[in-house]
Image (cartoon, rainbow, N blue to C red; front, side, top):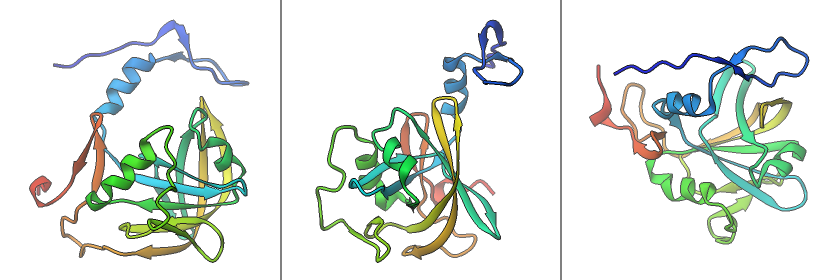
Length: 191
């Protein structure tokens, strides 16, 4: 069954200084994206006031040369203020073995760095979790406010890859889809 939602005049996108367009409702927008899976990452930073971490599915590569990635963070996130002030971040790219870390970063009101055996600091000072599939340390090169979120553009400076499936192999990717965690593997291959 296909459902369609038309924009209405009472829902106008809040775009300062731009032409106002009729806007899709928040519920319809969330329903559309609920079926769109996203890779799972944990982003860490320290602006000098202590380490912060959050789980994100908004990470995307932009360019290999120069190596750039983007992600977005809601202004309501407890990590938003520190990320807005941090010069560098570490983006941890997770697979199914990293599900406990994904859950930790997604849980409100907990000390995400209480287990001091699970993380350390890079020589450059950023907090990094141990044993994840891969991580990328990068410099924040741009921030853009968008709705109630901030989009971060990051220039990759350093990486570590612990688990890397061979090209064409299924691997063990962790994705978030329809409000739950999923593992991609050989069972999910369709070609």
